[in-house]
Image (cartoon, rainbow, N blue to C red; front, side, top):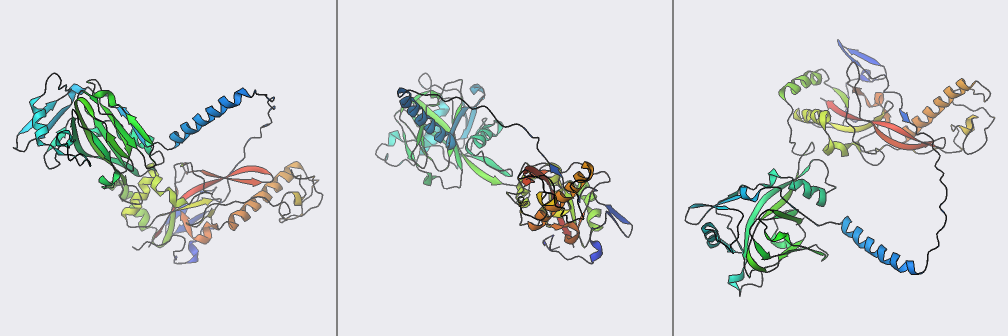
Length: 488
């Protein structure tokens, strides 16, 4: 099967058009939703938006200096709030349950229990660990080999009972540093190295060029080893810096700090004790319907879908999406929802991909469907339009009622009964909206030769809303989402 555009795919005959409410084809009968050809409009309640004016307040000259200082402080605060590049916290765990296992160069496995305070006692395993470490690439400290920061070699086995995957650290990093990350994008953490700093050691600024593994952030977890000094300084690409004190390896706390991949960091001199920390590389992975999916439909679901596709060969069929996504169809294409599909919509989309089909998402409303590359545009009323209500003899918010009788659907009298006028007004508004929809590029489902598949009793549908002005009032057009497939 070759993927092709659903709206442009040929069909065997014109008999497959959906101008009727039902269709029978060799014993196969499909029923359309009865409301598919009617536009659904939401009209907001009219409210009194007028509010009493506040009395003016005369301020003294002495207040302007304080207000200026306040505004400057607020500006700095909001600037930092709008561009966070670091986040810190602590892991809610008992440090006594933390154990580090490693294998030395001689092939012997050692274990290191926490918390540690080398001022009172230095565990033998810590001395073995320090002997196996290598100097950290710290520029400018080659003349002080005894003060270098060291790290445990990556070729020697190392593991710990601490796994950040068991704690909501990545969720906190995502919420703080990547709040706009769309669905289908995930953060994964890969342990980088174990860094050890003893008394007198410091780490010079580590530029991002030393971390060219494609990471988007770095997490540094300070282990519960007592020390003084060793504050971490993080700078962003513009030179703004933040300092983290980390608690000095208190035995009751395990601190962590995360910062963006574009930042550089350094650690101040260790005045006393030993500082040990794990660093993790945070990578951005993309999964979802458009790339590598994380879910696979069950065989039972695929078996249910198979006869539907077999009986629909040579047709363009469509399913309504059922989940709400809170988007504005006038601002984006329906295809932009693919990474955000959820629930039953995601299940159906992935199942169709298993059959090597090319599903497409289209906006649809009132029996019309928009092409895959078009948004929903309803436009606004034109006062001198021959189909506007004011020209039809009805009152308008822009002027007094006219007495002429012009109608595209027959003669209309301003002196008719209110019920007749209401019916005629609804017909005129529906016609105007239909004209706007067609001008925005939408075509009837019958012309697109799209056959909608639905249950005997239609269930809930995805409803997105587009604002438009009709007869001087703000209204909302209800737009659905169609999952369209051509079955060759």
